[in-house]
Amino acid sequence: GVKGVYKSTDAGQSWIRLDSAGSMDFRGIAGNSDLTNIIVSVYSTTLSDSKLIRSFDGGVTWTDLGITSDMLKLNSVAVSADFVKIAVVSYNAKIHKSVNGLGSSWTSMDAAGEKGWKGIACNSDFTKFVATVLNGFIYKSINGGETWIEIADSRAWGGVTVSSDFSKMAAVT
Image 1 (cartoon, helix red, strand yellow):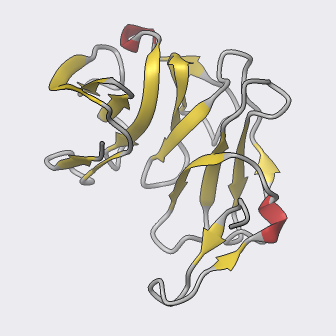
Image 2: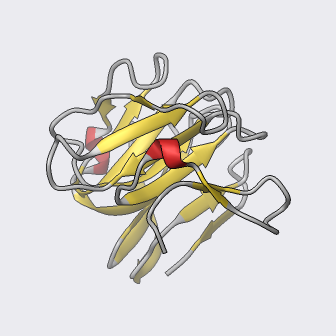
């Protein structure tokens, strides 16, 4: 099939490609409850091709949020319930977050270290995170990314998700 961002408005019975997003190596996607706001990560080894794009109109138009040179190879994205704060993981790099308006500035969560990050999820108020490492462990932070602890055995972890209150987690291998 054709690479792209696809959306269903009928509980998955049919899917349409959001052509305005283009055709790139999309890896991560997150949205608000009605999918009017969508954010997508694009994996690349070059800064010119690595992207984080967002749509505020259900995928009709897209804006490049801009990333820093240490945010290449974007694998996954997580957003707060109010769709203002973003966290991203990059393969063999650090976890980054933006807390002041959808990517207007970025800080790295240095305590998490540089790993083969594959997936990330957060609770609704963006204070707790869980992240997976490909051929590694699952880590969590309950203090906004200041400290991280290992919580699962080493496997080929992929995507991860959490309940809004952080009491439940699920991950794939």
